[in-house]
Length: 341
Image (cartoon, rainbow, N blue to C red; front, side, top):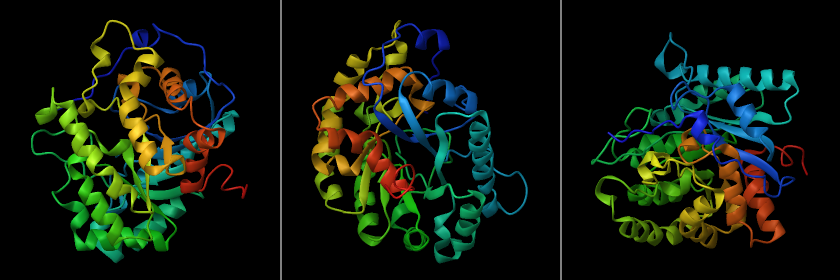
């Protein structure tokens, strides 16, 4: 079992940094609320988004939080959407500068195929204008178990019913978030080809493993991952979230150090994969993500975003806008995209 470790607030606060490029508009397209990972609620998120960066909006992504506890199983995930909407409305009532959960990515069992449409419609209604997509994790490796979600069946994305469910998303204007390990990227390629009208968002750069059989063999993992980027980028319906490096399976162990890393240290560690993704997909198909609270195992929220700004330092202004704001706004139809700007 590979487990995510939880940093203390004291450790996270040891190395404060001034905010780089503080007026840069940001949509954080991937965060959770959860009782796992040391706990992370609305107060925690607003504390982080208010720590210096100009985070105008966020996208909440499912993690099995606050499901309904009674009724038929297929309807239970609506409880997560309902709880997130309550948080978003509470943030608005407080006058928060960040539009919390401007987009919501929830869960539905797409193995039901076309029959899942009634659940999807109910999710859209529960989202009160915020529901944007579905995530079904397929992240699985025989060498270890990782994560708070149930272990998915092998070959999930190849199932005919599942693919019908993914195609159904497009008909309702919804996208699909894919969370896999790099050893499963061919499955994402095949799914993207089988559902060409559905936008597929690849989470966390595609799960570049650094544990299990890849412990101490990071270059082998990188080369395997890199060989699949070009065919993945050839699928025009795929976009990529850049982040997730604090997830335990990536093998970065900053949390074991006596002091948290600086944003420069993080940027240097992440640069090879970040540069490769942006080179393959272009900034218009990439978006930086916090993946908090999971990525607190790397550093504080403010430091993580400073690292992304260092990584984008040589990009054009248009590319920076896409990486930090524009791609997320367009894909999830929030912020300027929702306003028609």
